[in-house]
Amino acid sequence: MCHTQYLKNMTFTQNNLDRALSPYLNQHRHNPIWWQEWSQEAIEYAREHDRVLFVSVGYATCHWCHVMASEAFSDTEIADYVNRWFLPIKVDREQRPDIDHVMMQFLVATTGQGGWPLNVFLSPGIEPFFALTYAPPASRSGMPGFLDILHKVKAFYEQKRSTLRPLTFRWPGNGEKAAPDPSRLEHLVSETTSQFDSQNGGMRGAPKFPPHSSLLFLLHQPDPLSETTRFAVERTLDSMLHGGLHDHLQGGFFRYCVDVTWTIPHFEKMLYDQALMIWNLSLAYRRFGHERYRDAAAATIRCLDETFLDDCLFYSAHDADTADEEGGTYLWSYDELCRALTSTEFELLSRHYHITRQGNFEGKIHLVRRRDTVTPEAQITEPEALQAVEQKLLALRRRRAQPETDRKHVTAWNCLTAIGLLQAERSGIITDGIYRARSVLETLVRNHWTADGLARSSIAGQLQHQEFLEDHAALTLLAALLHEETGDLPELLNRADENLKAFHTENGWVEAANDDFLAVPADTFDHPTPTGRSLALWGRTLTALQQQTAPPFPHEYGPALQQDAYNCAVMLTQGEFHQIDGPAPIPWARVPINTVQVRTERPQYCYQGVCRPGLPEFAL
Image (cartoon, rainbow, N blue to C red; front, side):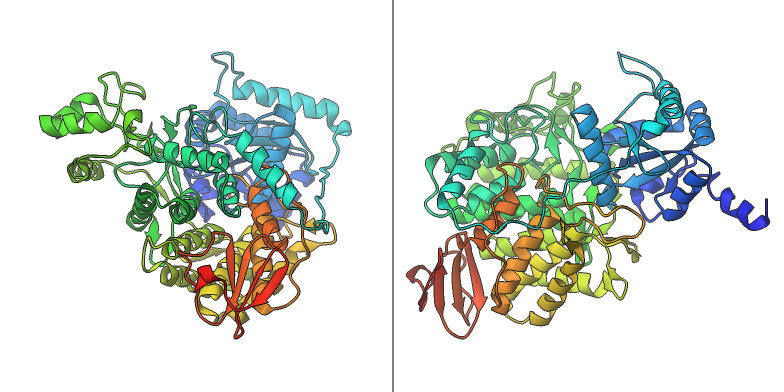
């Protein structure tokens, strides 16, 4: 073997994740497994040496990723077997949504469920043939051990490799031209609300994830909202606000709850959840006028400023664990609360929160509001005193060890956060939201948008240079919304719109424009965030309106519950938004939620395909 080839091979006989920019990959740098990052060189090495690819996908704040890292991935016997027969590759799903999307589709198709850590075995030709989520090192409680799984995977590949087939994708197409159809929209609203949990809010069953896109879709419906729609939105928001999803002391929201009553969360805090909760709470406050929505949005913004803000941008997430204990920062023992509070304070807290000696999470207490105090009619008779108790507990909590922070700045998630801040100002919740949204946009354009393209993320000033539809689309939508406010971003809108074209093919939208992976059809499932495809249609339509060029033709609505954010954008293409043309900013607090402004010199009002000169009465 020549020296050059020897050095090349040497890079794959050690764990190389200490070189990674991803905090998640860095968490695995001490594993005895010879983890590599996804790269063309790694794939070529696997093909040259006929190694099965073991691709493990996760993210930095994932509890079960941490568990598997400390168990199976730290086991030397497992590591020796993996290193001998496989090429192990670690992927941060937040940095490589294209790879995560393909692997997750395969997992769901073959097992019926998804989740992380997402572990997939593929041939060197990128042909997946087995996938699973968490597995213990050795068999226990009816679960097969990971080492046993590895042996079976190796045997299967050796026997069945000739039967494996390359990945194929179903392309959704470019969207079919469709005549405006209000009856179809009404049907989608009905279909969406019929799947809501009438008792607990959110979608039926458990676990309970915040249905961000479904709420956006329902809140953007034309006035007046039906009683059914209003009930679904309010019951869901109130359940999330008053249950265990909400951090009642510091503000902000956890990722999801494991139970049907929104009591116990999975404790990580994701930037995108804060962004979309601010957006939805702001719209709900404009629609319904409930102060609890205003207060929750303002508290979430404070949480962002205290724990996510890094100069003008925001970190990605906070871990579910503290010192290897899930939720450790947020939980209280009964005796701890007794010691921390006076008897009067403890009695007040107990009147508004479920406080029991046995607790509600592994013997400890996660603060959840009492149901008899969370109805819309309920009033806190002593809010200042309760707030003082909550602040006293928060001060004590801040002295504890805090969860680790994923310090990546993800372009798309920062754009969504900026949109949330903009909507908060439009709804009268804060006064500097538009300024702050503009600062986020300018920082991203200055720091993430280089001659190499729009970076997916950065950490400590180092850029991840792969490009993705979601980032370009989110930036386009943010720029279009800010242009509504100021009318001074035409060049940026043109640039953003032009760059989106790289992700649009004759088959439809693609998830990424990178050479080291397959051309993957853009995701169409608007959860937990609106997809790049949905953001692209929304942003491009607004951009075309601002440029006074032909907007995208009316698109066909997608399936309810799956493409709810996309259907918001389709509403815009079908004329279901009030369009107000004029030179001056419109009073957002007085206009319907489904309103757009086009900055022109001549006032004009358009709705459902009919335009007339002048401004509507509600915009004066």
